[in-house]
Length: 410
Image (cartoon, rainbow, N blue to C red):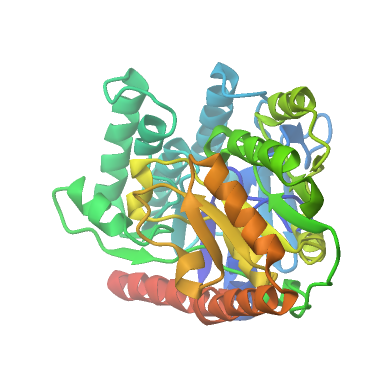
């Protein structure tokens, strides 16, 4: 099949961040499909132009058998009006430039929703070509802005995005969601029963080194690898580090934070004000190098903001990467979370996300566990990934959707 995936923020393994569509596309190509990913040349994660030289407006590239079309979009810093311009520019170019740039008419278009405007452009393109449209729901827009961004449900932007969201659900031939409970949310929003498949993020285990036992050491290192944004609750993590530095100086617990994001400068400033010597900020790590760094850790930490949004589930790349690296996890979550892979796999400790003292206690408990017990936790995490989140298993499900759509067209 010929498949076109439109994802504004898609990246390759040489970049830092989630590589969902590259790993899915690479597996699809191995199975004989032709896949083109359409993305912006301006990298959202680092806020840098990374693919195009001066004067270039687009670029074709083939990476590990996957075709890419990079479209130039205007740069921006932070969540300002310029970011909105970037979104709209990408969406406009998808709809009106792609028919000229794409060397073939795809048999299906997948429109991914890091924001709804690009998915709307993908739907319009599918209608133009007369091919099925698959709407991939990554985040529940605009509910994310209401629950995490604290925007009013009556804000004009929220109202506009609500209309686009409902339109896309009604127009989609199939909806793919990364969140296990989102089918109920989606069907509440529409007047028809929408065909929905849960296909979460997964792990390409060919990129992950074999599980390696942790080394018994006096220093216990806990790693966070991911975005430094408001939803990631890293301000709580800094408070945890301060508590441990003041109350548990002999445990020698050390935090390493890999990544980037809009909150990083403020977090670094706050860490200096706290006088933290048990925490260090490090640069983002490309996906192809990430797992080696993760295996240097004794454990991992992630903290989710307490939000009603998570009653539909979570789909965190970092959490799956942690589990694949076979290390235990301290996970801070809110009361609304209904699906917790760390708890299901018995791969670490789950504590309230807004309670820095409870998180600190969980970290100490993990650090004081015998290495053998931590290794057993890590192996349970790895086995859980191998059973439920292998890319091959998830692409089986995606292929079923594609084949069913092709069958409905004949």
